[in-house]
Length: 359
Image (cartoon, rainbow, N blue to C red; front, side, top):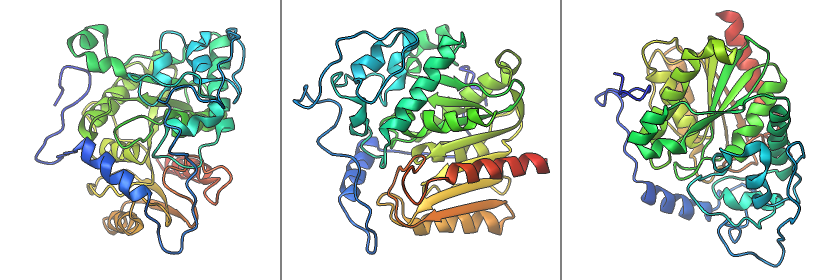
């Protein structure tokens, strides 16, 4: 049922999502300090670096303003990122929460400090993906799109916290839409949004990274459905194919991706593939799209047995599933650079391509 925003309302008898955000954040914080027998994963985020603290002795604001075509480095600060000419007008959407005040003196080499539920955050990868967008802007390409209208945002100001970052591939190629995770308390695009999209774009695919409203699974999924609707409705202008698109998500974002595959809106075809990273999400239908799943035995947030059960249940009803499990990486590993999970995204792309060939 259309809700008037360009998104869709799900039938609550089929699809009910209730989330107490504060309770979940507290529970996740407790789990993060617990170990798993047989796992040697060390946390890669320093809990003292939250991104909200006052300027510390080991951070220093860069006094030189960036030029429009100038690349960022890991020794630039969050303030440099937010002030970069390439991102003006939508710079706050780059950050995990665009309604928060961050320590602008924090260097990008410490960017893991603003991503508390993620691990193995690679500052070089983060900066490379940001510079990928700088280059696109310098080439005259538009990289940020609002998928809700100004009237809709006036009616509901929370919709101003949404948007789409576009990493272009070949004109007319299929698109992927990526929902980063963050426990529905923030959106981790810097780690598991922009880097994914960059890899897809390099391979010729069009990739969108979704900035969605935090606070709960239901409103976040509504934003994802609305964003897909926007892409489909504007496919000609965006120069993307609506055939064989894929839906990607990590952690909380993987729940959203699965929901979009299960309870898609009327008016457009189902995705060719759903890609889910490290989530224990259990809801599905017998008509779910082919699904790629990846997780780690040493995930302190997601129970690996729950992931295995979901994979088995999908296969039992005849859904094509590829499952890749890792041994020594923690929750929120992103591309997994430098870990045993490195390279999983190539496998996921290969799975999507296999589904396209079969369609």
